[in-house]
Length: 395
Image (cartoon, rainbow, N blue to C red; front, top):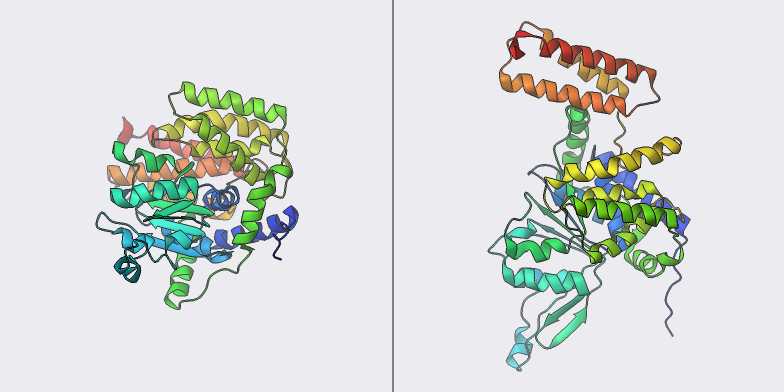
């Protein structure tokens, strides 16, 4: 008689998942928060969409994630010409001749445990309608047959947020929405180094990353993690206040999504091996926007709560913070200073690009609160900015 395997210990699974996250962080510079969200989405059994311009590693990062999770994986690039056969499997011709309509779903999306669909909002209505039930109810119907799918999480990517009302239903199925942008200027050298390594590995068809967890382990945790993670009344009160503040700003956040967010908070704690949720896990609320314009509003709501928590817990590293080398920042600052104060005449575009880079460097230096050198360099950045704004270019 078969028995359900016992769930893994939280501490052991957390250690392995963190190892998997570190593997990905070594490949994808500046994507720490996105990587964490991939893992906690899978732990919670929720779905996530990444939105950003082409060439920002949206596809690559999910494929790398799938390599460290021992799960059946399906991925596809969708277009408006993509047919359901390509996603859900071809019609079973032999059964059709006998009067039964069904699909052959072997090795197709309905049998996958982790799914990645690129350019999901370009799919036609036939595919989107089938996806709605599949991601929401974990069921797939073909003909008179309905099968339960083993889907853990569906990850998707798009170059833009959908504006067509017909796409609002599928967009709503993604609890988490993540912006995936180009890297800041001071990460450029690291981008080149890690990028060429990844390109070489892909050309050589080298398997990147070792498996750290199985689909069965993730599913067993999903069934039981409510028993392991505690949420204090203080946390729930803070969360309630933020939800109503978010809604008061005109950002739609339904009761259904609010309840689902509790699962994601718990998964964030589990990822760290914690048995209780803290205010640090509220960083997830930065990713519940419905339009890109709402990102800044959410940051203004969530940022102060996170700042207060980290100020009172200085021994905890900030979730999603990109580890930045002070030496890289100082080198980039030196290059920008030479460019701005040199004899070369800069175009308006070049000038504003360098000023934006200075702003990025200052923000990174401010995050290094424990470094006297970093705090001293903030003053130098301010002086350089004052010099530039006082110049004739801004007269």
